[in-house]
Amino acid sequence: MLTLKIKDIFSNRTEQTYGLMYKDEYEKDCCALFSFKEPKVLNFHTANCKFPILVVYLRDDLSIDSWYLMYPNESGFKSIKPCKFAVEMEFDKHKLIELKQSVMTRFDLKDKTISFY
Image 1 (cartoon, rainbow, N blue to C red):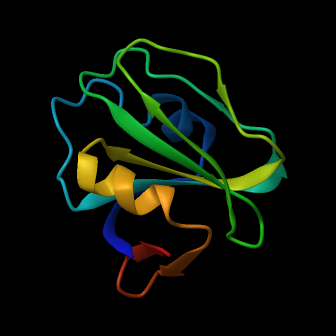
Image 2 (image 1 turned 90 degrees about the vertical axis):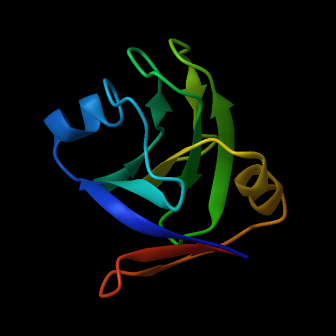
């Protein structure tokens, strides 16, 4: 199981457009949660990102739709089905190994954590 602190919650269009752009780094044990009002096919990019990112698309029931390892200035990473959430984190091998074994997520918004299992 992989558990990360939710450092940022992006819930409006401006925040979602910028995400992790222009950041020099992101804490290794943290992630950014993107929350959308309605499920939709999501399409993320890494324009102006300075480090590789793992993005995980989550359906309404918090099951994992898909995930991608994205390098700076790439585009075209779409969810398979409509999703209500996305999670971005700075890439590291440990996170990738845990994500490959995960199918669901759990949020604890009081403690600001997300777990992949």
